[in-house]
Amino acid sequence: MHHAEKGQVSLVSPLGASWSLITIILSVIFYRESLRINQLLAILFITIGIIIISVNLKDVIKNRSIQLLTGVKEGIISMFGWGISLFLLISVSKELGWFLPAFVFRFLILVLLITYIFYSKKSFLPKSDKFPWITLLLIGLFDMLAFFTYSLGVSGAYGSIVAPISSANTLVTIVLSVIFLKERVKPRQTIGIGAILCGLILISL
Image (cartoon, rainbow, N blue to C red; front, side, top):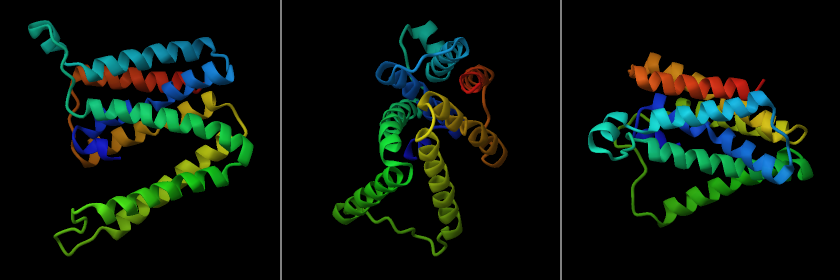
């Protein structure tokens, strides 16, 4: 996910992980899935958390202008992108089973990347001799595991239940970012992240 390059991972990750909010709303509209009280409260928590994380409140008060923090725009785009794509995956997974939709989706990504590399004039090879093969293989392994199990889940259950549980992966990302990347989160941002995490937990109950 390229959106994490620009801003703090511990800030961008909760925004991207809020894709479940988009998936749930679309599921309610198109699949007539009903929302419980805890899910409605969760949507409120996530929305408030996104606003707190995204907007620099000091600039709003001083300059009366809304200025998004670095990386927030990419995080929000990621949220909508994942939310819409994984919502569309629900119907095809129910019709075709879990394997084929996930396989075609990932194969399409591979084709697009190969096409981009072929037509791009940029060099994607690292300048140093050390190439992180092990890390990249682990990324691919965990990514495929997550995506295939999500497809398996929505093929036999409500997307509004599976999606929020899957999006709770942001908790793992935040903890690892603070521990290994030594990222510091401001108190206001902590409140926003906490609101989103509470929403993700509530929505999965």
